[in-house]
Amino acid sequence: MTNREIACVFRGIVKDPSMKNESSCALLGDTLPFAHHLCQRLASVPGVKKIEIAGSLRRMKETVGDIDLVAVSAKPESLMKYFVSMSEVVQVQEHGTTRSIVHLSNGLDCDLRVVSAESFGSALLYFTGSKEHGIALCKIANEKGMTLNEYGLYKENDGKKGAMVANKTEKEIYDALGLVYIEPELREMTGEIESAKQNTLQRLVSYKSLHGDFQVQSDWSDGEDSIEELAMSAQRAGLSYIAITDHTKSLTVANGLDEKRLEKQSRLIDRLNKKFHGITILKGSEVDILKDGSLDISDTALSRLDLVGISVHSYFNLSKDEQTKRIIKAMSHPSVNILFHPTTRRINRREECDMDLDEIYKAAKKYNVVLEINASPSRLDLKDVHIHRAQEYGCMFSIDSDAHNAEHFSFLQYGIGQARRGWLSEENILNTRTVKEVKKVLSKKR
Image (cartoon, rainbow, N blue to C red; front, side, top):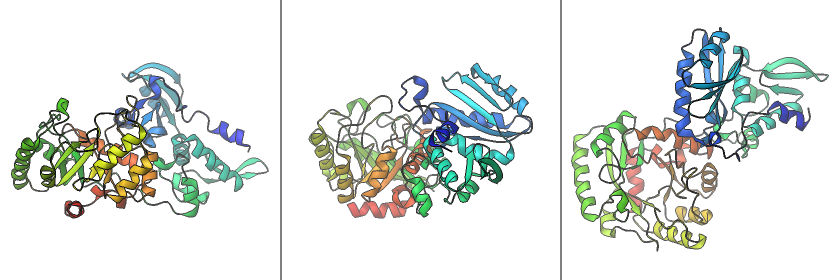
């Protein structure tokens, strides 16, 4: 099979990422919960045996162009009839017994395909993508005298399709190709094929591995809920500690805390920690980095906190050299533990600051400063490629929700997805550790 033929096999899996229309820029955090809701409803249709999200959503890309679903059903016609008649559907673009495409009220297209149980693994692999990853797998199959498509992996016999080799699960297909299983988040042609051949892929951080959250804003600054409400919600979410990191006084628009309010808040946290069992509240702050790289809270006040996070909220347009020096100066402060949302970007709204990220990574390693992976769907900062690069410098990371209300701890899944896309394992992430272990790490900086 030629390269052109391979590309044709995988046409249409993903949209061009350079597309700027609104349907190609939907946030992961807006789309994934909606897709899960659709799956739950469709799974209840009589005859449906299984249904999974595929496409860029399954790969946890930060923005997506559409929703892809793959299902197995004993009654595909009934499933398709229900699918195209859902209240969220504003236009039916295609309606068949094995494939239907609809345009939804949220502006996205949704593509549902029904496949046989025997072909579910190969179909899920095919429709998960990425296109480039799929093409690479096809090439490997060709080199081994096989053909790979959405129906399965087949032996070739004089240019014709021969016996089935694998199709029921993705893992058995990877095994047959001589590769260890590659997680969906890694299927972006960033070296995963080579690592899978050599069996050097590290085990990725799991979606249930976080014990805590280091960036949480309360109603003391610009959050919506009390510290007590946030702690209870975090505990319900399965966390055993949180750090309250309200903004500091320079960020007046966020009702930032000065030294006196910070001390008063610390006394409240002491009282709450005596009240709660199973959840620890750390005393923290999101300290503003001033233009010259100094911090806007006194050294004495910072030294009394359990955790100090720093962030840029102003002067986004400094030169590359000025911005880099500014941030590194702040990171060198002896009380600083974490650099929050390091590049300051807001997806579809603000580009990242111009800075020398390699120098930032070097400084993070030198000064024992953790780099945050901000899980807020509008940020997801650091990017996956930045995470991958920073890991090469031996940096430590945290995954934080940037919660501003009690419901925002659900954001952590997006940060974990971003970490997985950046090839991170649990050992690289500080808040996969217990609060006792975290306190030991933080105390070393003090």
